[in-house]
Length: 268
Length: 330
Image (tube, rainbow over all chains, first blue to last red; front, side):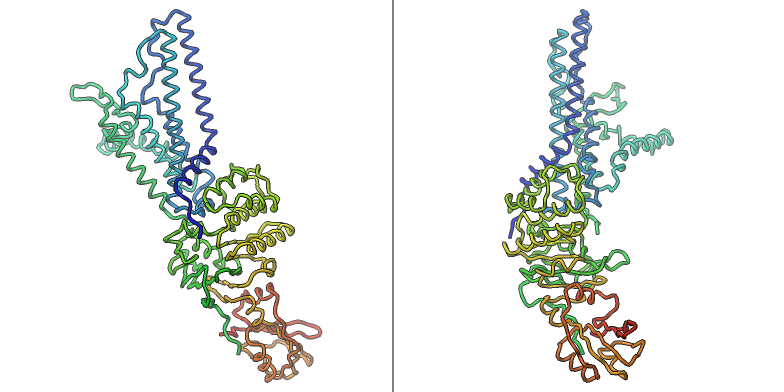
């Protein structure tokens, strides 16, 4: 009797095949980063040439919120990975010698691996461009000196949460439109509902989902939109809020993904 | 009277076995109490009209869908408990070619597939690709139905599984490639002991190497037996009958529509040849010959939409009329 494949072999192969599948997205990211670097360096050189170096502020810098670009990428990636394998057309994937849920989760993990690689690349490029532009304009402050150490991890966790939610939709939904336009529609619908409900208690509760203490904003950057302390000062990003929100949203997304991956295909 | 068609093959070791297997889709019963028995090393043809439950049975064996009730075993393994191990030991060609890998090239797909099957034979895979006239640089999304079928066949065979489950393996192939495919299958089985469960509408293509048959209709197994036994037991009897022949209801069948002085009787009957000949003789008919049916004709007879195993025709010099038969075997 032949043995089933080892999980590590399947995972390696999934990393390889998903990498090949989404390489267009990777090239797009590389192209965007190259363009960003070229523009940043060109602008800095112009500033120096115009003897405006004294007024050039912080190069191009980095804030955790800059990773919102990657979050969009994270929402798009599963749609691209699973587009050809909608639940009704997943026979080849399902007939492979790996348990159904393990196989789906392994493929999702392979996509996450590339997403993390893309995020790391994004940060490396941003940091290098920041350092180079600071050097060009003659500033000596170290890169990211205005950031807490934990804030460097925020882009990784933020895109991970978005990716897991999007993967659950991509694995479970039959129509691609559901996961491509679903999340933005959900957000727009919620915002509209809040606007219609005015400042009612229901509206406030709904808004807390996005910008509350453990809302999506906190998971994205440890911040609370419009949040103020007792003295009326704007709340600074907080590691506690970030960890709390990330654990909450991450657990919800992972549970959803697991349930969707376990669900049996109804193909006849 | 002829006996009922056999459905029990449990005497030897079974590679595939189901017990009281049922599948219900809302109000439609796709399978009812199925007891499929595929002996080890057999080439088993599972035949049936569209919607008979063939593909449903296969999908249950591979744990692609869940049965409503009953059990299934493949090489002694429960597909629901050990789906990965079952699929590792089965080479599967699905009826629908739902790849989901339209962007991938065939060469890359082979590499991908090989990683999932530790027993993958690289040289054999390359040889199969050459035999099936396939290129390694073609994108899956651009393959024709026939090409897709051949890629699936190559992938099903190249890891040399102990069990092959082929759902319409020659569908979409041209006559030359059909012939090539059966040749490849014959060579494959000759090389390594393999149990084959084969669903097809093109039974004549597999006449030369199939050795068992199962007939599925409306989700129920109508017959299941070795082909040798089928050829021996299912025969077409041609007999001369007298003008005032009273055997029209023989075998529980028949209402003769037209009578003439000269008659020629044509019955397809399951049962012991000498006993049937004797019965016909007692009824006044003179049996001219009793010939075994080709696999195609036997399948047609068994798949008849009427509940019959006796098919009779009264032929006259100027006209042909069917004798309507009812269940004769029950």
